[in-house]
Amino acid sequence: MTTLTNALPAVLLAAAVMLTTPASAEVAMSGSLTASRACPALQSIRKKTNPGDVALDVGTTYAVVAANKSPADHYLLVVPGADPERRWVETSCGSLSGAAAAAPRDTGAEERKSAGQGGGIDAILAISWQPSFCETKPDKTECRTQTADRFDATHFTLHGLWPQPRSNAYCGVPEKDVTADRTGKWKKLPAVRLSAATRAELDKVMPGTRSNLERHEWTKHGTCYGLSMEDYFSSALNLMRDVNASPVQALFARKLGGEVTSGEVAAAFDAAFGKGAGARIRMSCAEDPSTGRRMVGEITIALAGSAAGKRGLGDLMLAAAPTADRGCPRGVVDGAGAR
Image (cartoon, rainbow, N blue to C red; front, side, top):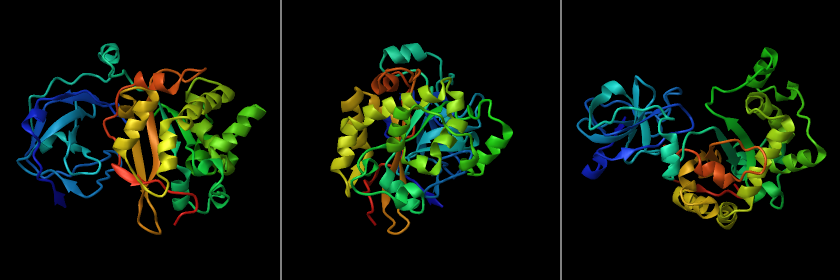
């Protein structure tokens, strides 16, 4: 197991970091933890994932970002050199110092929002870079038919609009449909009924409809969003228009075949949707099974408030809390059919 010896500058040890992540209902904290055990530093508590097989270095002090709950059994630390650098460790792994009392995620939300820090997180918009997805799932219908001149070769595609917390799923859904969804039998799920115009746009912006992705997204997530099928997908498509008409799409189109950094992507979101928007995203990467390249696969965007109607993506992003885990630091912008 690899240990990291990078000690944090002293100025960081007392810094209060008020960040949350859309993946869990953690509690913001500040201060530092000095490691007394070489504990594994996990990316996910639930899945026990540990990219890079990272462990704490005994005697090293790490900045504390959050606790997983109150009372806590895990702390979220900044672990320099790890990828991603924000990692969960058990509370017994060291001693706290200078730690502020933990506060629930929504405490002071209005004050943080007025200070430009955002409030809570009501939903996540997940946007995909389809060529990367197709490198990993080449047998999918939408991937077998992808061409370099099709919309999804150079524009972001809709994965889903997910109400938070993530446990908010399958609202009022019969057990047989929950089972079908969880076992990947999406064709057996109820059909999504949309107007002709919305259906046509969805088929373009969500190429996964060729594999019944929209049935899965409605069954698991849309049923909990509080809108009709038509309004739910129309709202998501409105947000996708904002993304694909922005400097974010232009950046990816310009970088086709090359590498993009998370900093460049965050800057593009700031330019498109206002200063601070780039702090509300997480970039995920996937490994190309044939070449080993690390490709940008998806960006998840934190939102606060309802996406119903014509409310813009920027307003929803800036109303949300920043994300604690920014994801992978860099990746290739894959092109359609590239190997």
